Structure formats: C-alpha cells, structure tokens
Image 1 (tube, rainbow, N blue to C red):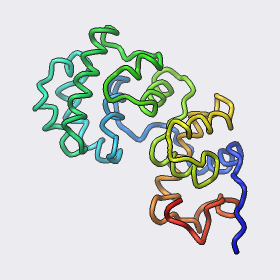
Image 2 (image 1 turned 180 degrees about the vertical axis):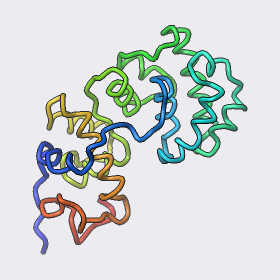
Image 3 (image 1 turned 45 degrees about the vertical axis):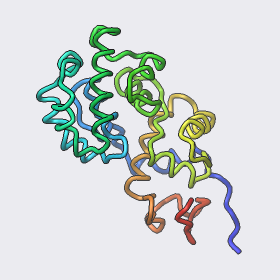
Amino acid sequence: MRTQLPPMPADEVLTILSPLWPDHRSALNYGSCFQLLVAVVLSAQCTDEQVNRVTPALFAIYPDAQALAGARLSDVERLVHSTGFYHAKARNIIASAQQIVHSYGGAVPEAMEALLSLPGVGRKTANLVRSVCFGLPGIIVDTHVLRIARRLGIAPTDDPAKSERMIAASLPQEQWTRFSNVLNRHAKYVCTARKPHCAECPLAMNCPSTQPFDQHR
C-alpha cells in the first residue's frame, strides 16, 4: 500500500520550479492594461493561444475603453465568438468598458474592490491585472494553478477562493505573483490535467500525487 506523502512546502516548490520557468510574463498578448483586462475575461474556459488569435482584430477596432464602450454588441460577439460563451463575454467587456469610462475616466482602476465591480471580472482577473499593471502582489488562481496546488497538497481544495487563501498563508507577499506564474506554466506543460508527465517533473519524488496517479486528484 502506497504511503501518502505530506504536502510540499510552497517555498520549496518555488525554488525548484523557478529555474524551469524564468519567463513570468502573462501568456496573453496585450498593449495596455485595458487590453489585458479584456483578454483575461475572454480567456475564461478558453486557451490563451485562442484568445491571442482573437484579440488582434478586436483591439484593432476597439483599442481602448472609450472605443469598446460604444461598440455594438453583435459586432463584438462576432469578433470573440471563437473564445466560447461569446454572448456573455461580449456583454461583459462592453459593460466593463462603459463602467471604466464613466467611473474611472477610461483608466483601469487599481483597487481590488473596483476591479471586482466590473462585469465578468473575478479575483483571478483582478489579481492578474493588479500584479501586471500596478506591481502589486497577487495570487492568480486559474484552473492550472488550482489543479497543481491541489495535487501538491499546498491547497487541497477545488474552491479557487480557498486555494488563494491557502497559498497566501504559505508564502510571503513578494512571492505570490511569481509563485502563481511558475505553477501556471508547470501545470500547463508538465502537470497536465489528464496525463501529467510525472517522469519529467522534478517534484515527483516528493509529490503526494505521483504514480500510481489518480486522475480525479
């Protein structure tokens, strides 16, 4: 019978994985904080690669909040159709643009509460925008980070909000953003959802979820 290993310390995970994933930039392409916000909203239930295929045409027509605030819904739906859930996404990014123009003078707000008040913006999006645009610490719990943090035992939960709190408690603030980005890359390319590449993973010897692997973990 296989003995369950204890959770891996978050700081140890960061030390081991950081050299493997030195690029801590967002995988989404953007030219401004507003474009980053829109791209992250579009990335829900969609790959970054697909979003990057869609946003050049979208941003060519609607490069800023002022332009998108006056957009016709059907035109935006057509442009973002391939990202999935396009009715809701188009409505949300137009409504967010309108709110940013009317309430914040066209500039993406910095405060967490202000960002969370924008349609379609959750904590993942808000933390990413705050970290990239304002240099603030943020734990960006997307599906990849949620999965690998659970498998490593750092945050054994399927709830993104709980995962964020557990990760926050395990690391100093200055490491939050870097940790999120490292986990995202490792989960996306090594600790994948259905068939994790444990043989290629430097964490495998101490990971609570190594082979024999339970795909439900």
